[in-house]
Length: 222
Figure 1 (cartoon, one colour):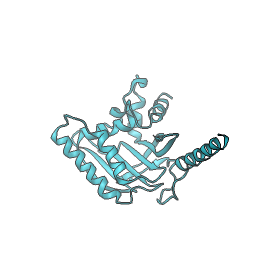
Figure 2 (cartoon, one colour):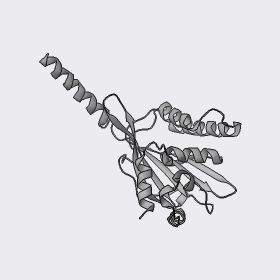
Figure 3 (cartoon, helix red, strand yellow):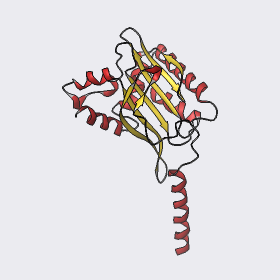
Figure 4 (spheres, helix red, strand yellow):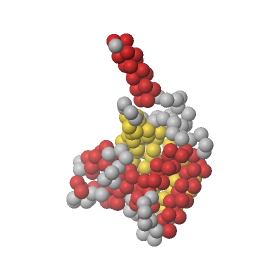
């Protein structure tokens, strides 16, 4: 009985080590899955890092890191939100995704802490974005989004240290969502509902990395 317990705990230790440790060597050119650069510059526009958090996946005996979420905003967006009086009840997914002055106002950068397959990434995002009763226009936008990610991620999936980024840009007439994979823009989509729902995944009440919203609240309450 004693030996059975010893063997069980040895295998348990090995399982946890494999599940929570580095599952491969960093392959990407970013190679910093647990940290985010202070500045993100899509199309040469400088956005400031204001919040981070870690998306985790619960396995049988442990939660493992999947990717870090970095939230970047423009200086103009920061000034607007810091003037808000009811800071503690801001819906960040709504306020941060609103377009201003034809420039990028928000970016979400996902830096992967481990290798993840193409289907796992794309299917998770499409499922989170879809629901019964969606309009045909919105469904078409989601399919375009899916196609952009599927074709650009590639069959090998995303490796540790590589990034996927989404950038909210535009103005009151045209609201665009830019999609970047491994630092390169792979396409853009003009659909306000898709912009809003994607922002909600990372900034909404059920954000995939809840500390992102908590850290934003602290940032704007200073």
